[in-house]
Length: 443
Image (tube, rainbow, N blue to C red; front, side):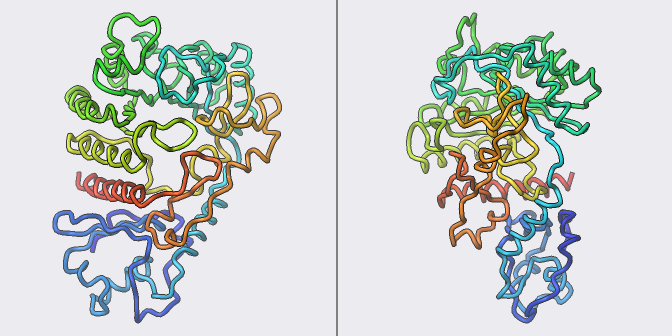
């Protein structure tokens, strides 16, 4: 046996398992066994975040009372083997509650700034259709600086430039970044952008003045498909060529690129071809990643074309192809994080600032109610708390190895009840992360 990854520091508070009937043990419900690697098995505990490597003989005797006593004792002490009557779900919830208290934020630290609702693209699936094309004023941007100063507690802050197309109103990014720098407030930023409006001069400014380190840019297909789907206004030449050139300029400048591929039944085949293109052009960059998501109507997680099961099958197929090409897929650090919330919407450390200074909980559900403004702070706690109401888990969730990291929000159209094919997809992705982590330790 070899410890590949030590447990989360909260495991020290949890301590060793000390009570229960040790004569009859079973594998902890929230352990995930990855496919064999080098004739050995990786076992990851989704509660404690510890990962072990067992050889075939050790793995085959895992559930046997005849297994090596020292191995058995370690697996028992460290919550891999538990008594038959152990309440696994209670332990997972207790750890989440403890983490919620330990890591409760004292201040805001993450600010999503919607610079404008206007955009130079006309994507048919945009969830912002019907929204008023308002832009943040220079004065509001100055007021945003004062709001951040008063709510961040002097700590480093993380900005997310969002829209619309945030570069359609880059002046307010200058104002906010310059204002924070003048006050000595440390910050870094990321952006969700279509990438069209970047220039070499703007990239240099973004890196040096905006402290931009990550950009999510969407490509919906190869050149012809992309140009038709994005339908840029006032476009000269091929938008695909311009955007893909800008992606490379950003990569060269050190900015991490998360290339988003939006999938539906009509473009999945073309995205396979796109994978070949981006693999040849960008795979050598360490700061290049790809993520995939099926296109929904923006008000639910139902795909625009086909059934949800079809959509997940397309996603799996595309992810497998991306993996076969050796392209890194963009993911959060799920192997180390104890999940106490679903996303920014139910986090006390994050807020969305609309162009007029209103405060919201979610950047994607733009029609949702406001909870305050940069001038008054949060004034409607009921709205804030609505985003924290979770769904009650089903009985089948009790033994699902994904449960410790699974939170469903009633307000959120994406955080819905999961279906078997969704669980399969998430479990496969977790197993891939486990194997990738192990392989990274070998380097």
